[in-house]
Length: 119
Image (cartoon, rainbow, N blue to C red; front, side):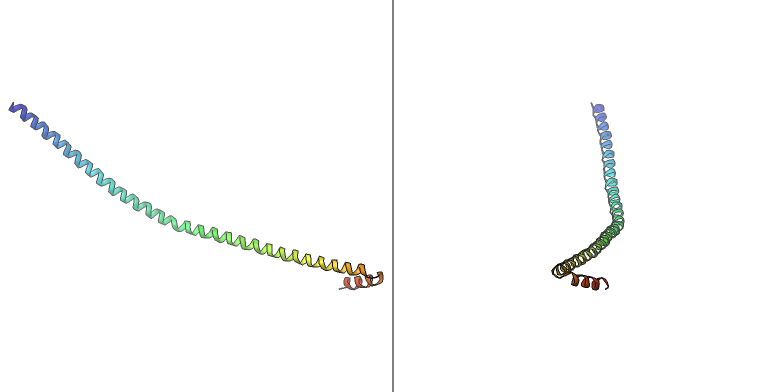
């Protein structure tokens, strides 16, 4: 019985040693994973920080481009609007002149038309 008890005690010690080794491996793996995670987190933050600058520059360039195109289009439309308003004014003046000519006799019409054309 003492021999069986000694054998069981020896087996128990071996199992305890295996469990202690397993615990040591698990602790080592846990520590390694936490450390690697910290390193990966640092690398990712650094890489994204480095990417932020070119992204901000590209964003500013795009916004500046949109602003420039908008200013160009608005200036072109303003110029076209001025031209159209000028044309409308000249047409209104021509209409007034035609109405005046229609109200005058033929001789005065020719004289006024000739004086306007010679300007």
